[in-house]
Amino acid sequence: MANYDFPTEIISLPSQGKCYPESNPLSKGTVEIKYMTAREEEILASQNLVRKGVVIDRLFESIIVEKEINIDDIVLGDKNAILLATRVLGYGPEYKIEVLNSLGEQQEVIVDLGKVQTKEIDFDLLSSENKYDFTTPHGKDELEFKILTHGDESKIDADIKALQRLNKGSVSAELTTRYRYMILSVNGESDTKSITNFINNKFITRDTRAFREYIAKITPDINMEFDFEDEQTGDVEVKNIPMGVGFFWPTE
Image (tube, rainbow, N blue to C red; front, side, top):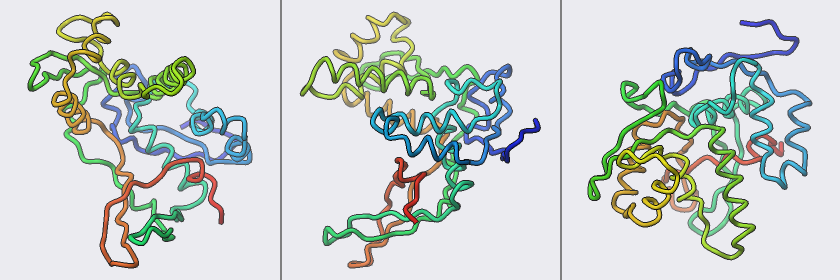
């Protein structure tokens, strides 16, 4: 553990480091992060970064203190765990949000972020090369794919924004863009043209659903969910915990 002139914490990664080659420092299954300071609050308060939609990414880049780590290599589930730990270390586990109840009214809820658990997966399925095989159940196509990383997510966001500027008012290409970055080859063909043609013309919905289910099965992550009890009916429903700018900028 290096000596820094600011407080740090070592956290465990949901992947246990099994998504990275042995030569990658992330393969040790932990990462050292800094506590948020006035510098990070300045990042969160930057309206310019908020308008550009990159404020959370800039925060993420700021808190990783191990210089030998390339943050673009970090798989998204590990990134989520790092951001969660950053928030808890910075403001504590109590997170106030508002949820629409059965009457359509905003109900204030306090979520205990300290209770968020790591997702249970079969770690034997993880690959240190971050390459996986999947055969579509109906089309019988052989896919090689990867679990998306922080670097992939940044490129995907840039591509989607560029497409939106070029094709205003058209249907969002977010899902197909994500598939394009995730799928490495189709039936042995790894060129962009073959992969794009498959996604747009041959990847039938029954197979896309099965593909997404398999990805969810093997992807390391945290369970960002909580049990919401409707104060009007007493019914309990599982809801997603929102992780926007407000997640890092509590009003109280």
